[in-house]
Image (cartoon, rainbow, N blue to C red; front, side, top):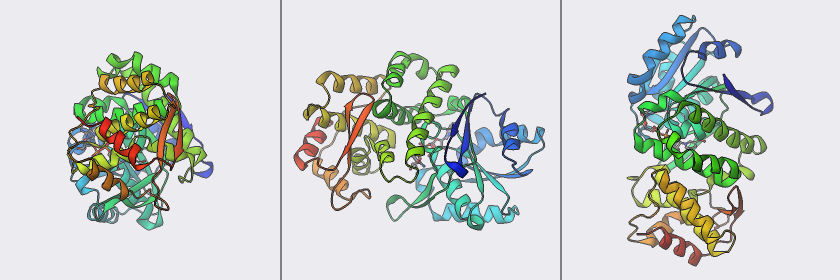
Length: 359
Ligand SMILES: NC(=O)c1ccc[n+]([C@@H]2O[C@H](COP(=O)([O-])OP(=O)(O)OC[C@H]3O[C@@H](n4cnc5c(N)ncnc54)[C@H](O)[C@@H]3O)[C@@H](O)[C@H]2O)c1
């Protein structure tokens, strides 16, 4: 099985890349998982994969209970966390117990947060089933929930003991969710790895037709990039912020559309906007900007949106929780594969960038 070690001292863990659940029990044995497990999932993924996972684990001597909360970002809240904690108590989980998070980023963030606070912290394993969670959110240990209109405002750093990526789960993922996940994938190429970006350009058809080998290669390189960044800056004191490329304007666009567009769709627009600021500053060429936009388009992104009121987007940016001393941090490409962080982007540059991505 393809694997990758995330090196975080005592919090180190493996990421496995494969196309079935068959190898999971062996991986659980290797980390001394107890015989009884709690699978936390959402109402969509439960119907698709919970039975298969329970049966596969049963064959290898594991007993697992399943707890599902209603799917969707709107349920990423304290009520769902309390539901998970109730299931932990009802199933008799103790300090040595383990939660398996089966689902997308919402499941991973919430099961991880519940694991971080139940009995002051128990182990959990990520079994991501969306492209976004397989390429981004399952690695890095950020867990949490939304509260009072602020995304991920309550949470904890809690690293998983294992990440087990079964790329075949992507076959049931709605296309819009797949495209959305590609936003983070393309982001990784632009911020860190020109060769990976070229791989994405060369393999568009294979990725979009869900070729297993290509999906495994893609997931592995994504996780390597995310892991390299997290290993150098586990708690986001510096380098880790480059993962926010496309997110400064992207988040504000997401809010201005009242979350009718997916996160990835907005990150795609945000990357086009940030690349435009770089082009205007002559840090990248017109050709490089066009290249980034054409890769986004090839993967199904709209790189222009009907933004009727740019000042509404600007106002949402001012509420960004990553603002420090009144200044927003931008991540701007220096070339494809390298970015810089800056807090000196001016109001007029921001309005020009919003104008660039407006239809
Ligand atoms: N922790 C981190 O570092 C990090 C990073 C990026 C994003 N996130 C978080 O991730 C969340 C978004 O994750 P997401 O995009 O995976 O959303 P999600 O978990 O809501 O999944 C999207 C939809 O797909 C469904 N689904 C999941 N797997 C499926 C499958 N294999 N087949 C069919 N349907 C499936 C889900 O039920 C849901 O309806 C956000 O809450 C975001 O804040 C966290």
